[in-house]
Amino acid sequence: MTLPAETASQINQNTLTYQKKNRLSAQLLSAFPAFESQNFRRYFPGQVISMIGTWIQMVAQGWLVLEITGSAFDVGLAAAASTLPPLFLSLLGGVIVDRYPRRTILLWTQSAAMLLAFVLGIFAMTGTVTLSIILALSFLLGCVNALNVPALQAFLSEIVEREHLPSAIAMNSAIYNGSRIIGPAIAGFLISATGTGSAFLVNGVSFFAVLLSLLSMKRAQREPLEKTTQNPLQAIKEGLLYSWSHPLIRTSIFFIAVIAIFAWSYVTMLPVIAKHTFGMDASGMGYLYGVSGLGSVVGTVLLSIYSRKVDRLVFIAGGTILFAFALIGFTFTTFLPAALFFLFVSGFGLVSAVSTLSATIQSTVDDRFRGRVMSLYMMIFMGFMPIGNLEIGYLSEHFGTSIAIRIGCLVTILASVVLIFSSRGVRKAYSRYQAS
Image (cartoon, rainbow, N blue to C red):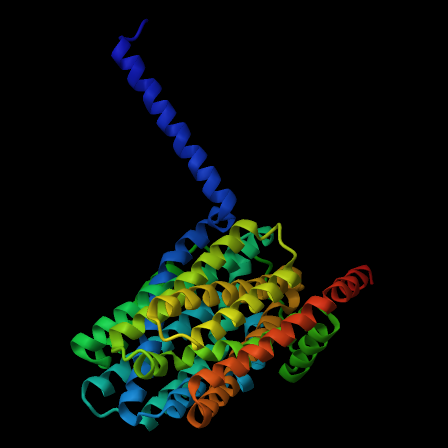
């Protein structure tokens, strides 16, 4: 039977359209292989919404503290309160992550963080909020994150194939940093329109998205959790010895300590810079966060695409040096377009390096130690941030914010140069470790 010419032409057109869509899907999966996993596709949108809410709260909290006290040191102190608990509790959190279902842990930690956001929002809305209340709630949120963050990092290995972990980590970082574009902009609008209280309540509502995302996932494919009666302190010691004996993990953890103290802390001072250097209100402050976040997203997307083609240690050092020089440039300008450009480049460099550090650890760690190693990594990253926040707050109070940021950048550049010169020795040591 011969089809009419118009029908045959329509069928051919539909076939070509279908083939083009398939080719496009194949190209996207090749660039972002983590999305081959159905669980990751469910995880992604919930985490995006939740992280936007988190950034709304972070920006609103910094602005609220500045309004209450007018002190750059207090802004740093409030940020330090939420990052101090991981310094003491993350290692215990890693033991829990290695022993209990990670999705269950995440459901509990996300629920707790949601409750804290609502409590802070109620205090702010009723006008009863004080610096002491902010510090107490920030500290409690830090306790939650001491368990939540290593659980989330380890959970990625359950929802994607091992060879897709670098892509999943890069996309997870893209979520965090992409939300830096949207979250601060929304925060600026909310603060200007309705005050900081509504920003905290919006963050509380955003947690429903990630909870629904976790509940909708199919059971992760992983080996059953090991039933052990090992003393938690012994388990912590075992994880520390494993991390110290592993050359790549040891080097990555040392370097993330430098970043946590001397590089990442500049984010804490953006409200101060927005208000005192550029005369911006809350909406303008959101632009500074957003541009930095946009650079971070570009960096993590490129990392996902080229994750199998880069020399990781050199990429880490190079990205950090790029960040440091761009941020130094930012501190020397009062011309807003130039400042936004420097923030974009600094976000690109720093987050590319941090994402690569995390991917390096996740790709090499033994699954038996994954929770404990990631808890150590996050303990250093998040737990050392209070040192950086207090350091930059103190230096800003006494010498000015620009000088404080430049000092951190110079230390970061020095550490990056050391990493470049030692990278060949680290790779050789890792080869011997694998052979043993």
